[in-house]
Length: 380
Image 1 (spheres, rainbow, N blue to C red):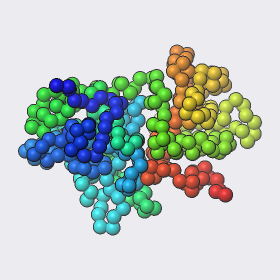
Image 2: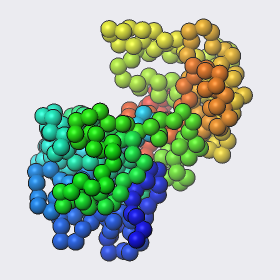
Image 3: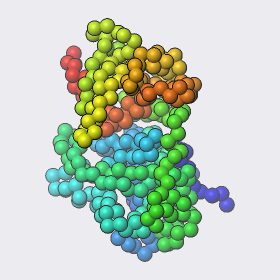
Image 4: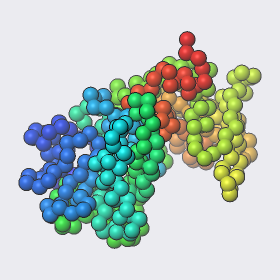
């Protein structure tokens, strides 16, 4: 019998119904005659055979594929940091509060047990992304690190919602048999990182995604996905507009004081913007930087030549920031790390995550009105 398991970054078939033999999502996870995974778009759960206050497992789907289902929030999966920021299921509703939505109730229960130190009661979280219809990608086995109660916008209305901060455990695969065993209160086939977490030991967090070299696919959204269309729109900005755009991206970082200006208005000195970040009190440390902003098609990667040009402009103690709508070639990354240049590489996927974090992307889209507002430009 072939082992069924979810492996990091791998693609699986989601037919939306466990009745289909080829379905690798609901069909794999559900168990007959046991309260199964709810067929909801985001937060789902699998109950124990003998129902308890918390479920045996939680399944989260970060959905970016086009659908008829209204999705006002945008999640962020930061694979390099081994973290994910996942919105609860609150929406604009005149009768319901943030805590009245089923998914939020579940997240709050998990958070309360986390604060009380009941790690043995907390369920594992399986995180998936769905950039295209009919397919899901396994993003990892997660644990809840914190739960924020904050605002977002739904149909132009401010709405309270929860946002879960997740840590991805250092586990390359999750066996379906382990999830099924948990339903019957057995702990066989448990990943070692999960055993450490549930017993109170410091678990190993994801190292697979923390590698320094990123492939092209890890730096760009899937072709023809909603995120890809947004990136194409950004790539269509005029050169001067794109420079303003990159400055606004950096200014959107919370809790850091910024002084950033572009150079083209006076004279291009081999870099596109410069300035300083001031870290918040009590550090109050100032970091001077210079940056390049380049629009490239997804088929054209940034090579060593472009990075070395910026590196040559950095003086002692300065930091470099290179922002592109495309990706960085492996050779460029290798040479950068070998020479130990202090340059941060921001790719197309990173730009999308910046926009999601600043709440610019709404309903899987970036409107012209919001884009021009972001740029502080008048729409003609």
